[in-house]
Length: 280
Image (cartoon, rainbow, N blue to C red; front, top):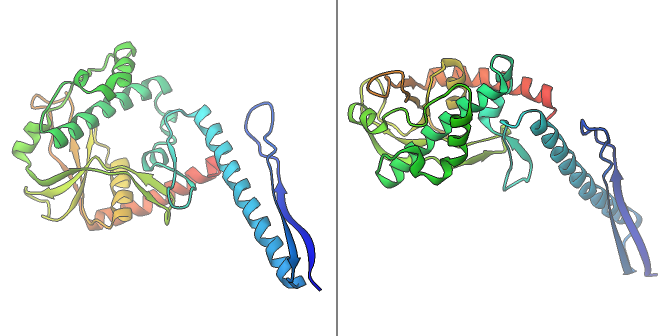
C-alpha cells in the first residue's frame, strides 16, 4: 500500500575559527514523498543521500572558516574556489612562501610582493599591448604603488627592462598566462606567460615563463615544477628583471625536465607542511 512519508538527513558541528566564538553551522534536508512506493532499503539510501549533501555543505563551510582564519593571520596568502569542484585551493606561491614571514617582516614582505606584482603586470601589458609603459600607466598597479611609496624600504616602482631582455633572449608565440585550477594535486596558479624560447641552452618547446625581481633557485624551481606538472609542460624559465643591473635584466634561469622532477618532489613536501600548519 502506498503512503506519504517524510524523510530527512542533516548534520551539525562546531568549527574553531580562531576568534572568541566558534562557528556552529547546521545543515539539513527534508523531503515529503506522497504515494511513496519505496521499500525500506530505498528509503535508507535516500536518507543517506540527503546526509551526504548536508555533509558536503558542512565541509564547504569549514573550508571557508579555515581560510578566513588564515587570511587574518597572513593577508598575503591566496585561496580561490575551483570552478569544477568548488573546493577552495591555495595558490602555488602561497604554499611555497607560507613560512616567508619567519625570515622577513610582514611589512617588508608586502613591499617586495608589491614591486614584484608591478613588474609582472608591466610584462603582461607588454605582451598583450606591445608597449612597455611606466607602472603609473597601468590602473591595476595603484594599490602596489601606494604600498611602495609609503613603505620604509623605498623600493622603486619602475625597475627592469623586458623589451631589452627579449632583444637578447627572444621568445616566440608569447601569450599571457591564464589561471588554472589543479584539483588533482590541490592547488591553483597563474604563470606570467608562455612561449617558445629561441636562445642558447633552452629547448625550442612550449615553456612556462615566470618573471622575478630576485631569483631564488629553490622557490622558483618549485613554482615552475608545480605549474609544469599541472599543465603538462616539460620546461620552465625564470626571467630576472630588476634594477640591480644596468641593463635591467639578468640571464634567464632554465629548468629542464630532470630539474623540474626534483623540484616537484620538494614542492610536494612543502605542500604537506602547509597542510599540516593550516589544516587545508
